[in-house]
Length: 110
Length: 411
Image (tube, rainbow over all chains, first blue to last red):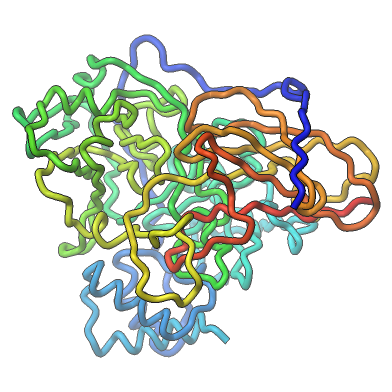
């Protein structure tokens, strides 16, 4: 690799706009109240989608799962295990395999 | 996928880029229209995301997750200014228990633990301390995770989980000095007002070593680009850790605990760890790797005015410009290549707004012949650290900083 470091005299060729306002003078805090989108959609229907709906959606909306790439069954197993052990999701052992099967059915690595 | 999209995001309007398939940075530019679709060119997909305007105090952002929110800055925003507007600044929360009503009169910041005086600070108490201001990039550890190959689980970000703002507030050191740190303090732990949904889940907390916490640069910000922080960016108070990944920049900060033992909480001890290698890089499948908590950011740079698939005129003078940041050190130089990395030329640098901020770069070049060409840009920081020439990889999808490549066609 050849790196030819040529001097360049174009530094001021365009304006570097900085629209940021300075925080000057007195700063006042105002209370706020907002609404956040519910994010209450259900998983696509399929075998065991009810189990996924019942166990996954307390903590996060479905788009977290649906935006994932195709992953191996082992990778999905690791994700569900992480939700149980690290994040304390109260998923019954009998439901773990069903959820993994569902995730594999919608997002499996070919 | 239409049937699973929440009704408040559903839209009949769909906006696709003409060259969406080849686009690298191409995100649909539709600031005035809510609920459009953009395509992120993530290898293997899924690449379709909604552009949402459904979140409070926020403009058009890429919807990665609705609850708790993961919202990404569309890449064209980075061409418009080196400071990222508050309403376009990316958003990332771990837990869905986000307070939506903040009473600024009732708010108190606790400073407690291994200190002489456990002081609750009202917001006005903070205003009475010396005011400091600095520009700094806030970047998610997993920014650009969607480009990791093999792909890894997690937020599937393109390159927009970052932003630069001018932060105004007080030094953490000054706050700690008011409380009086006792001898033997080793770390300082930070907790925000956000809460878990499940009672046994680990509350989000992060810690810094005591010397880092007292370095005079780490600060508590109550303003961002001269305005109060948007709620989703941590109103009313956020920790700013210049040069470090945003996992440390605890939002809605209301609890500071000085520790006389190393923090063993989940988010410090177990989560957010990287292989103890340059740029956290390992071979996929490697085992027995020593890990450390993620820490300083590495340098990155991007072309912002030319997108993959753009058609340029052969032989014609062409302007390339973009942004660079040095991570934990200032930008030393930005080098540009229009021949796929065979030769490099130093780019001109814009105004230096501070060690930790975005720096504008630009250069004029001409493509010598018709056909396909690859543009590349690389940032070197003041420590001599630079970007990797082949993609770094780790199982968490952290710290990507490969030299970006933009394929264009000269006609």
